[in-house]
Figure 1 (cartoon, helix red, strand yellow):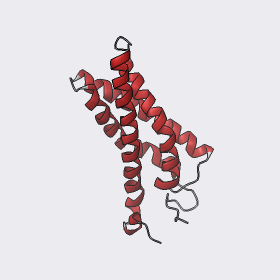
Figure 2 (cartoon, one colour):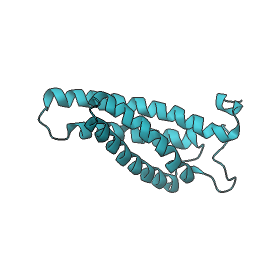
Figure 3 (cartoon, one colour):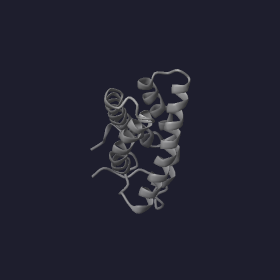
Figure 4 (tube, helix red, strand yellow):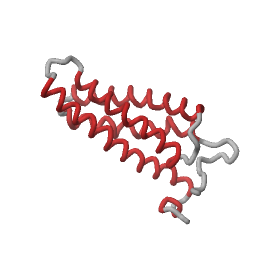
Length: 148
């Protein structure tokens, strides 16, 4: 059975799947960020750093589901210590990039609600290239593995 990405040239398949997983993760992370941002603004307005805290909560929850989707769907590999370690390193870099974009955009007068989604999207582009080497298989030199 061919999947819809199976119709694409092989060099584009993982990038398209990465985009799908990224869209799911972005929606999840931003939704959680937005909810916690609203809760903190309403109930803890004097809490210093509540924007970063709301963003971090969304990031952590999304990271778990993103690892599994990235392993099984994007790069068609099994979860293991090597790709888990690579994923965590990549996500740590991604988190720093996201938070830096978040605060830069807020400093440039973008509303907190919009800065969160923009920061996630901008950092997602960087994340693909950081993660790719950790999910390549050695025996075939590719990330592709057929669906069963």
